Amino acid sequence: MTSLRKIAIAGAGIGGLAAAALLAQAGHDVTVYDQFDAPGPVGSGLILQETGLTILGELGLRERAETLGAPIRRLHGQAVNSGRTVLDVRYDAIRPSLRGISIQRPVLFDLVYQAAREAGANIVPSTRIIAAQAVGGYLTTGDGKTLGPFDLVVDALGVRSPLSSRPRSQLAYGALWATLPWQEGHGFERNALAQRYRQARQMAGVMPSGRSEEEGVDTLTYFWSIRTDQYQAWKQAPLSAWKAEAVALWPETAVFLDQLKSHAQLTYAEYDHRTHAPAVNQRLVHIGDSWHAASPQLGQGANMALLDAYALSRALCVHDDLDRQLRHYTSMRSGHVRMFQTMSWLFTPVYQSDSTILAWLRDWLAAPISKIPPAPKVLAAMVSGGMGRPLNRLGLKAGDVSFTAE
Image 1 (tube, rainbow, N blue to C red):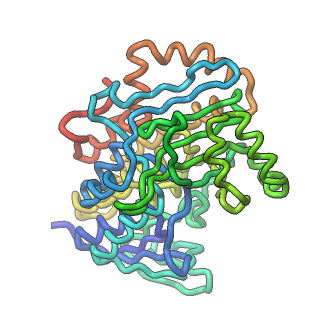
Image 2: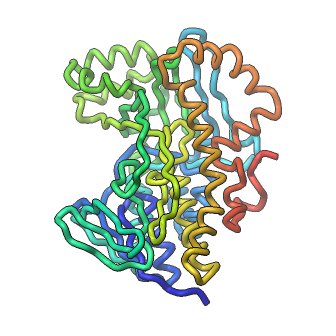
């Protein structure tokens, strides 16, 4: 029988709360520290892939997530200058039943938050963590208090975690996003994420994002790519000027943009690419974006954090020695992390950059090649998170068959 441990989790995001729920269910003494007075979600709608959905299934949350979310069966993108389809990923290239579930981030947050509380995790608000002592298992708060000792400290504070020392590489492009009511009759598919591009400098997207409650209004997430160094100028300019630019890129979105009356209705997000190494240091372990942050182009952030959370909980059940357990954690996840970090680094400039050459290659070379087998299946495996068989590494299976590309 493995030892039950006293565990501190810094950060009450999706990954931190999922880890809290899984670890508390296993009998560990878990305390989550969050800097806000009341923990809450930060970010836009997201797609839960089969990887993340499988982990939610282990928490008993999958059915609820699928009920509140919107099924996504296709990702489609078109270059406006040429009219060419430059992104066409279909989940059924792997198996007919495979799909993603697009969900509002607050909805997913509430699911894992309640699961953590019901499992017995203690969630402590208004506690900003600024440092960790990895050898002794202590945490330091913003007001100078020392917490601990703990057998294990989990860093789930995200890309800007003060417990993670690896320098960040801020990406040139961020995004504006808004959650809006869905409207029928304007050519948008209820089961597809759609995008439009002007070279790689402009990108807009529309994604169904489900409901906040079963009888609630269906919603969509609208997002607009923007250079980080242009955000302040955007805030100071009339909103009508930006709306005219956005409608010029994609006229069909005018019906959604008409609902935006102020800059405050759009949330700005900036992104970083970085991998903290090592993932484990003595009693300190990193999960989610505090270990591996990337562009949202592949939509894997929350799914990767859920995989990390499950891997950590599984590792603590396999051996009795903490060092061996944490080595097992990194062995289950490091290969998949490296793969998706590399793919994110390669693909992001193709869709968000100032490069004219990359956009041309995407439109006239990569897009046609992507339609030739086995490319459709490989792309679907990449988008759905199945490349590298991450669930197999955790002793799990997706549905009744493997969903990865051979």
